[in-house]
Length: 211
Ligand SMILES: [Zn+2]
Image 1: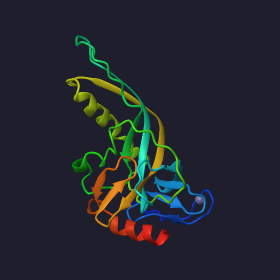
Image 2: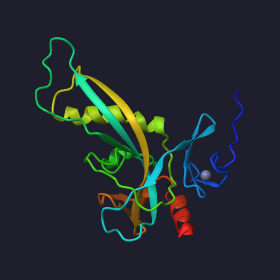
Image 3: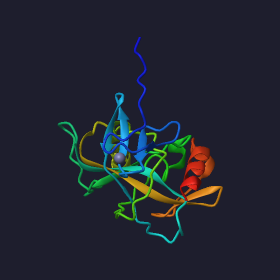
Image 4: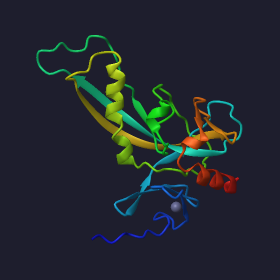
């Protein structure tokens, strides 16, 4: 039997206190602003930056984490089948939420895949980012099925072979407004019922204490 590892919530970078919700695998350091992911019982630092809102949502109540994967994708059919003729360029970035919804697929955008739009995020003022329950490797698993699903809407993808390389992974803190019932992101204005977030109670409590 394996002995459970007890991790002290101290930033391995600077010794600062780490913060997260009860189910978190990503912890935010209040001293250096780094995000530490628990991988195999130890902390691994991840690049994080808070995104500048693109919509006038007022002062965000908090930021939720989002994985952005820069991808190079290519696909081909096995011998004997014509190659795709219509032009389609795979997106450069695939956005996978790092926060857990009770049923991510149900919400489409902004559920598991934050958006299928080709948005470009720009860094804003640094902000705490808690609520990350999906680590890098777990999130990466959704990239290829997502690319196949958007390709499938253009062509029958039976037998298609997709190759996909992830060149870069960046964590973004997405600003959210919250009217107490509905969360609205400041990037695309997509709405989520607060109750859809598994840890909404813990998140709201934490956001309000940091105000
Ligand atoms: Zn730190």
